[in-house]
Length: 232
Image (tube, rainbow, N blue to C red; front, top):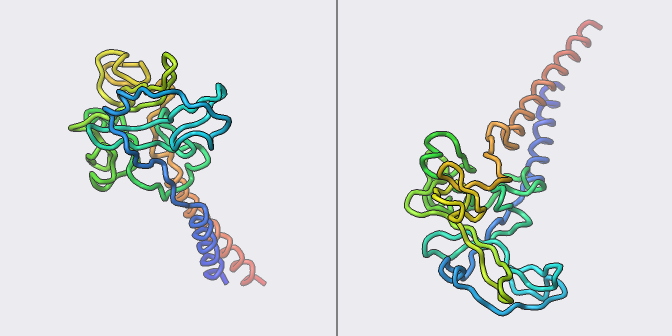
């Protein structure tokens, strides 16, 4: 009876774990390069809803289509960021998706290699360079070695639609103007709302702790039931 209860609890936890874990698409390859976004200068498109706007744009309260966020590296095609899933400012999944573990690559957050070496910055775990937007994985962390990551966002300027582009958080900088956030601190771009992710408090590790706790609790319960039965 005791072993059956333990197996049942384990199976139940695995079922919950698999149901709550779905494939998450945080980025989509685009046809734009960084140079193309930097020189983008198009007429404003009027809209009534998001469906009136081209892919990657949203209809704002001004009833105009404004392109969303893109992450770019060197001359590669930029990635359009699905902000329903990933927040490029805080550099983490939005709250409702943080319990999901099937996050499709690449890892979007990038650490400067010096900050990674100094244990100041961490990203979601990578196994190879192909896992990272930056194209470089060192000790499980996506880092910038040869190329820096640039964040771009559509904006209305002088009755035209353009893009504001700047270095993403964790990239090296000399002036505030180097950074998308316009915030350069001690030689590194920093999003004022961003927090360095503490992996010891990550959801995945807490799931493991919960499973162990359930197994121990079930074992203790079975032992108590067995002892009570033998006394009778």
